[in-house]
Length: 393
Ligand code: GLY
Image (cartoon, rainbow, N blue to C red):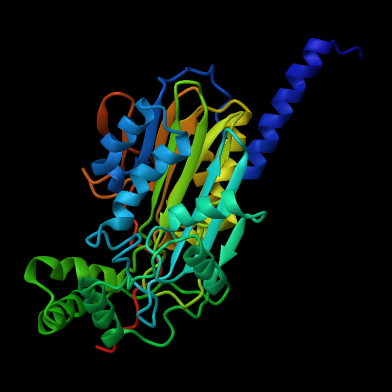
C-alpha cells in the first residue's frame, strides 16, 4: 500500500499522541493552536505578590530577566515572617535552617544551584553567583556556604524566634520515624490513621500556648507540626524581547533530615528554562516533583506544542501515574506548577482543587498586577505530605 508523505506525517503525529497517552497513563489533549500572551510578564508563587511591583519597575528599567525574578524572590527571603524561604524559614529536625535554590538564565543558557546551605539568607543570589563565577552548576552544604562567604554574602543566624518555637513544638511531639521512610506508595507504606487528629490538635494548641506562641499564630503552628510544609517561591520572567529566566528558592521541607534537598535546587525539577521555549517552576512535594522532573517535563511539553496549561497538566498527570491513580497516596501530595511560554502565554496548575474557594493561587504582572486561580487536576484536598507524625496521645 502506498502512503503519501502527508498521510505519513499525520499517522506519525497520531502515533506520537498515542505514545503520549500510554506514557502519562491518561489522555493528553492534542497540541492546540498557540495563542500568544502579552510581553513582558512575570509569573510567580502567591508569596511573591508584594514584590511584583519592584520587579516590574526593574524590568521596565531594562533589567535582565533573571535579575527581575530575583527582585521578587529575595522579598520573601529577606522577610523573617515568611517561614518558607530564606531568613525565618522552618528548620530541619535539628533546628538548623537549610536553604536550596536554583536558577536558569535563558539569554545565556546558563544555570546555577545551591543545596543545603546554612547561615546565608539570599540563596537565590548565591545560585546566580555559582552560575556567574564558577565553572560549575551546583554547590552544596558547607562548600556552598564558604563559596557564598567568599563572594561577600554575610553569615547570619536564620532561625527566628517564631520558627524556633514552632520547631520546639514539633520536637515535643515527633516520633523518631517521621522521616525515615517508607516513601508514599512503597510496598510497606500504609496511609496514616488520622482518627485522633481532633484530640491531637487540642493538645498541640495547649502546648503551643505554653511555649509562648501568640494565640493568633497557634493554629498555623499546629498545622505545620502535623503537616510539615514545603514552602518555596518560584518566579519566571519574560521580557519584551521574549527572553526568559526562572528561579526557585526555599527552606525546603520543615523538620527534614539534615542534608535532605528537595526539588528546588534541582535543575529540571524545581525550575527549568529553555530560551527557545519558555520557563517553568514548582512549589510543593519536592520528592514527587524530582521523580517526574516536573519543570523540564513541562517545558518539553510546550516544545511539542502544548499550551502552558496543558503542559502543566501533563506533569501533574505523571505524578498521578507514578501513584497509579491511588487517591489514598495522592492526598498526601501537593503540587503547583508555574508555566510561562516565551511569547508571554502562562498558566498556574495545581494537583488538588483544595476546599471550595481555596484553590491554590499564583500571581502575575504584565502591566497589571493580579492574583489568579490555578487550574486543578483533582477535586478535593491534599492533607499535605508527609503523613501526620505519630503523636503519642
Ligand atoms: N518544594 C520544596 C521542597 O520540597 O523542598
